[in-house]
Length: 442
Picture: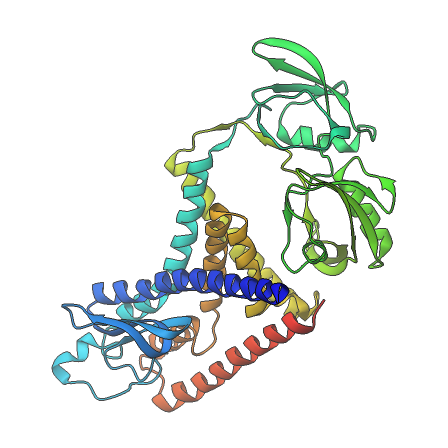
């Protein structure tokens, strides 16, 4: 009974986190359609979060019905004259006096702006979140000055302190953070090295760990490590009985095992040491020289043992960082889709609602900042997907408008409705395909 209650609690947490994240993203997306449409002189009849039976509703002074519906898996804005929530077709006849206020009767520029505003607002949300997080956390100072230092097991003891400026490790100079993390190419494997530091103006040498110890900074959802029970903050001490001093050693053992079970000896703060048995999954990853390569992975990321001292971030710098991070998500999504279409990577890289929900729940469990960061990632990805030239999506509407701009006349309702049905079938098929991957892909 307790196990069933635990599973039910996990399910409710997963569903709840997913619904909250999706509702925020959908609300921002649909508000983009609504507000730009309103600015363009197009009247919105219904603004809905969710589909199906109405749970809550109110009507504003402009006549728009705002509602929360029973099925929280999306949302829509229905403009005057729309045939349906997808804004497909011309719908009911509109009073000629109000035709300019309908989506179909508005000028082409107003329709383009209104439709494009949904994805654009998703990108704006992502940029704002990433920029806000940069302002909140700051950026690393150029010199290698230590901020927070994460706990390590007793056998990896050290005398480093927050505020220390690192000058050299093992006799090798450290000019910046990149140079520090590149030292694992030249330092010998050992639990401790001599760290040459400056502390309160005085230079000294103190014992410290490898700059890249086997510290787990993150665990990917639905990965071998996640399924086995590993957590961020764990430190890997051994793999199959062989001592581990550096994070890159884990990757070497995983690659050599080629999917066979391996045993990780792990230290966890407040718990001590324990063994975890897991089998790596094969994944397609971007190659340094372009394209993709297959690698065995258990789903852990390293780094994070040392956090750099930070400086305040200006608004312009933060916005530049937010734009760059959002563009990275869009570019990687486009590259991934193209790679699947051309057969460079397997179709198991497409995740469905289950994997997204589980990832969202794990992000929420990791803390508010992780949850907000994940919402920004999802918002950018959803904005990109909505721009794909598939009828029923915003990108499909923009293709129809492009046709109208070139030919001087809109596509016929018959063609629009036919292509919309095809687009709907494509979207539903993709959702089913993603769901099947969640259930059957490793």
